[in-house]
Image 1: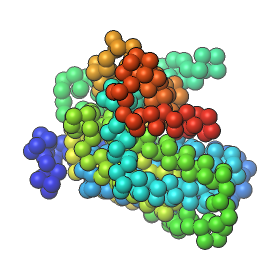
Image 2: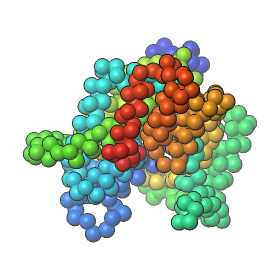
Image 3: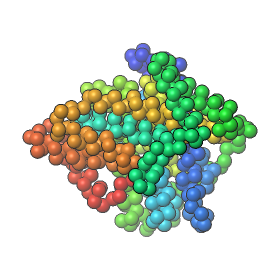
Image 4: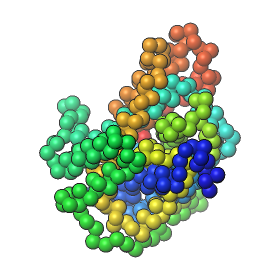
Length: 447
């Protein structure tokens, strides 16, 4: 086991990998609560029940998709990256496709299935790996830093430190709010442990914050530990219904746009996550991602598996960077994360104690670690600085990793050509420029 995952080469051990995998799971566990609420359109009153996905079934599908995806990533690609149904993509699925377009959720699952199958083909042909390796190092650094700002923003938002404001878009939240104070306490404790160089500081910070939250009455102590696993039957295999019962519904421009959107956002969210986490873990070699093809194949297989169970697109999670910060360096951590998602099926009451205010400090700290890649960007070269900066700033401002990548990649060939450095631009980057232009013209970015 140690030899397969190259523990000695990467300077890690079972303890670090287990703590890293557990930290990643805790940082991702919110999806087990959020995804069923999102896909069932729980926040929308007076909807026909036929439009709502069964919450219990989606909970099981979410856990199974995350478990299988994380195990694929750990065993096949050997990267410390957890997978689960992606935020943003599930919102697009629920609110744009099902609620906005009136498409049955069963057909929407078919769209997810098709996008996953196309991803598998692209991964096996090596095209996805070729694209990722064609991205210049400067933009890879920018992607990592942009994701760092994005998840820090998420952390501040989840903590209630930053809130929405109709006049200024965002504003400082009510710092006297008790859950927000709990998050601030967690941030301070985690920072102290990080400064003291305590290994697993992020994980211990979350545990400490949870315990303090229970003592203060801000987190409800679960009355039971084990609960019955709901049935997945209401959603399992629903992705095949349209194929066999209503194939005509799949022969429309609307359905094609849905598949392309799932495809596009998942591709570049995953690419950004893989590059950022691999950079953070020190796994990049000559600005290229080793075993990128296997990582992308694992992601593709997870999407197909998740659609069959009955959930929206499964993708690589940037919260995995919390696990890397806690010490994870190999796929063994992802196996730990996957097994914990399986266990979560039986211990769902315990998940309720891992609130957004508990995980917020971890996201903020990880953001601090990830923006260190800013120092590697050639800021004095304006042709590099412009696309890099736009990539970084657009991610939190558009609330989308994929859109940030798209904006930066549109400007990169332009600035390089004007500066007389067009020969340094890989031909694939010109192709991506054209695709991104079409994307902004014809498809509303989501993600």
